[in-house]
Image 1: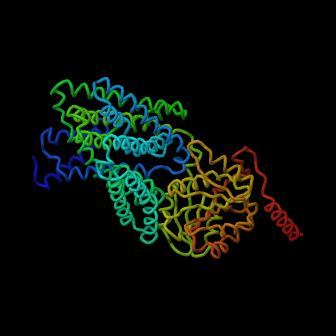
Image 2: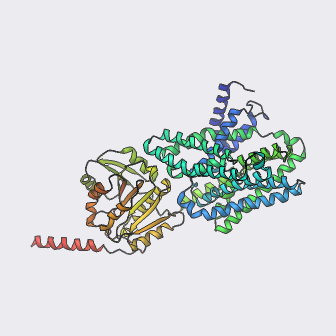
Image 3: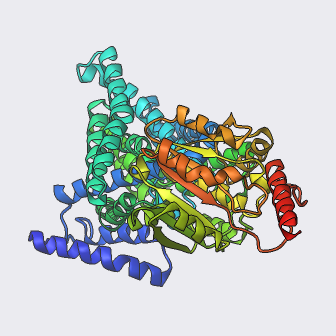
Amino acid sequence: MITSPLAVISLVLAMILLVPMVCRKIRIPSIVGFIVMGIIVGPYGFSLLGGGATIQTLGKIGMLYIMLQAGIEVDVNDFRQQRTHAVLFGFYSFIVPFILGIFTSLALGFDYVTSALLGAMYGSHTLMTYPIASRYGVQNHAATNIAVGGTMLTITLALLVLAILRNRVYESGISPWGLVGRIVLTISVITILFPFLAKRFFKRWTDATSGFLVVMTMMMMAAWLADWAELEGILGAFLCGVALNKLVPNLGPVMQRINFVGNNLFVPLFLIGVGMMINVRYLWSGWTTVIIAIVMIGTKLAGKWLAAYLAQKSFHLAGEERQLIFGLTHATAAGTLAIVTIGFQLGIFGDEILNASVLMILVLCTTASFVTEYAAKRLALQEQARLEADKKDDAWLMLTVGENRQYELRELSELAQLPNPSFAAEDEWSDAAQLINHQSKASIIYHPAQPANTISRLLVAVPLYAEKEHDFISCFGLVRRLSSQLGAKVVFFTNEDTQKALQAFCRRKGKYLRASYREMENWEDVLMIAKQMAPDDMIVMINARPSTPSYNPLFEQVPVMLEKFFSKHSYMVVYPEQETGNAVPDLLTGDTPQASRTWRIVSAIKRAVLSFQQR
């Protein structure tokens, strides 16, 4: 056994480096490779590593990382749309394996207490394969949101059954009301106090390294609070991720550091630690452990597949979506280890169940990796092949006025996922307007008054006939993606006809946006937005170039308006791409739209003046 700390660290880092390379060569998920490597180097393999407290502690941080990532990467808009489905699937995913597990455990001759605890273990699951879904870019897919949302409910119900069976209330000396008080206090601190403190921090310190350390500190504190409240740390980490969702954009620099450190260090250490717990010699020590393991694996697979099948039928999902849900929710690790360890310590479980549970973890992590990778790859290919309503071949021009803010412009382009951005800075608004009017591509003038991840609402001013612009759909997609990344609510200020078009865009399948609407019949009323702005709001003005359907002469006053009424707030002025042809097709009807009444009047006056001058 290697005892030198430097040698242990060298061996672990070498495994983290080489295992993914080998797995890519032999076409198996790296999750499986790390677990197998843990078996090889662990105390039940060649005993190169002894499974010390350091590796186990770092491995536990890896599990917390996975749950934190799952909470942070939830698409808030899509999750709101899928929240009913997520809760219902959570009941499916717990109740079906729970009932099935009780019957199979009783058939094996276990008593009711053991059977109920085994049923709770079957009902819980761990999002071990979530990094695979994230790697293929389907982490915001409806099926992923349903699985992630249901996870919190299954973990909570499993831990509740565990608490009842072990009689934790009386064993720990805490009264029932005291336990409830701890749980309420923990949830309140994580979901209310943590976001409040994090938002204040991000406003003062904007560097990504400090933000990363803040998130890590809060993750560890959330896990500790959950343990203090007689819950599990993984539940606290997940709640922390959900609480910080709005402040840590998926494409922001803080999340990049979280993914880098977690996926390249802590998560592999966790998987190696799981492998080190597996004693494959029990496969040859007798048939009892093998039979129990086979029944446990079959029960878990059947229960989770039936839950995914019920979700498919209830929510009208495709086959690949059912497979993705099944792959994400039948892997098991942290929850199972917690239940089995406590059950073993209390004498509810024997050695056979303990060893069979560890073998079950190995098999289910392997099958879940293959199923998730297959389904995620299929869905990613379908998404890539599907005609995307938001145009991906655009080129965007991004400007700041008065000060060169290249970093903020690049950060905004990454958050909004803008294709082919170019950046510029102008000293005066007149210079920026001239630059925009002399080219046709979509453009943004951005004024960052505070860090983007601290924005809580997007107040979007949409002029009359904006929906008839050639590239209005790209401007809508910009707002939707920013709302998704920032977790910011969207309020549209527009007229009744344009509001109907926006509502149709918001209901698109896979492009859902939850928004509210305020009546703004004329552009003259745009200043009403200033009366409704809160400190953390950002105004987004959809503007237009001359000779386009939604152009209004009052747009020329936008710079003065912004400087006078909105200078203390972040704002964006967005110009849709201008079509080079003559007719501008209506996105909803395909007809050529009529120009606005204001523009027709102005055009008529210009023609009259020109005609008079020519005479």
